[in-house]
Length: 549
Image 1 (cartoon, rainbow, N blue to C red):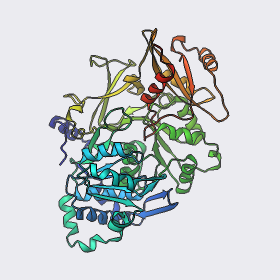
Image 2: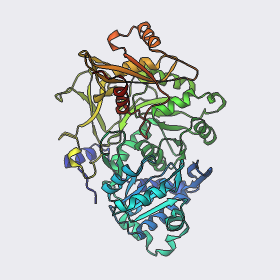
Image 3: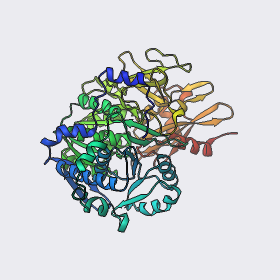
Image 4: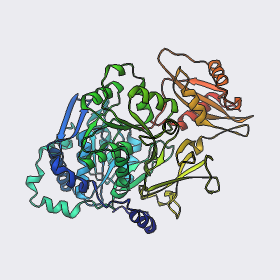
């Protein structure tokens, strides 16, 4: 059994504040499902087969129980890890519910991971079962897992959706009616059902240069966050929730899957990002609410086909995962005619802050919002001392939705005795408590002894009519310590030179010492699975191109 690293003091604080609800997703479903049995629970679109699937709550609950019994028949016990590398398909949802029923830990991994990453992740988790698509985006996942299996001795069973023979997911879990073979199924479920303070999810962090860390969460940490976002956004069972961000990432898992199921709402999924397909889904399914990273919002806002779609049902788009350009929030608000909510969070602490629907424009366009009830934030200096209003420092957070440890890496659990967690982000907090993420601590550029305000430079670049996305990184320089490189993608038909950029900064009256010395126009950026720009990759590129001796 995977143990929580939360101190008894922090557990007591979360309960005393009323932020832990002591319910699992199954408990919420027990309350809402009886009145929603014949309503749509999930509808997906498998872009590999072109087949759409729609399941009612009745069908989803029945299939999840069947899958749970199929897992138990393989020897999966309480506390065992079940891993799966699946796109946003209905099977992802059913598998998680199945794990909850038998007390197994859900470990979703991103479809982009390959031999090296998966060998490490599955080995560390000691996964007994792994489920993959036979093929996704032209890659044979089933063959890869067969090659990995000898290096992961605990991995006894591999199944593939669309697979053949003994590896067939459908043959073992769906076609075989396990409920008819298991006379005491409900008793088994009652005995093994996941409890609210047990680890339910193992999710590896993405985007780092080192060994992935397996963040651990419980139902209590998850729903401390989800319940507050349901309240903040005024969501109910009548709303349609759209998730194009991978459910193997915290955004998709929490907001795209758990939130609609908790409400008994309709969940609409998209497995491969395409802005025009997303617009079609929003129109055809009557989507009210969605969440995704900044690139998704930019793609929808800038798509030339946008005027042809009726997306008038779309009311709320939460954009988080990276600092969102002010100019994008403003243009998205105007073009999508929806509330754009800027938010901030991490795999470890979930969606901690966000703007509110009735906030003043300057807060909506210029901040990443207020912390949700149950969570606190502060900025500190290098010595760990709390800073005042509008002073930049490292952002720390604490509260009821914080993770409960890293798998087998207790020394990495960077939380102090008071529960403050070092996020690695830089930020300012204004007099009203609204935060603005200004960058990553390691993203600071010090040019000739002067700190370059990276986010401010990027924000200004995003306002340039030729630029679609911009990212600024430092490159070592023998004389100045560092110089700055601006990487940009351009809008269709546009061009930009270094002289154009300098002229623009001059017109905008930005201090000359903040101007990037180099400009690199790229087709696209290296990104994490959740869409964040991988600045460490850009820094590597910059060193190859621009570093001086």
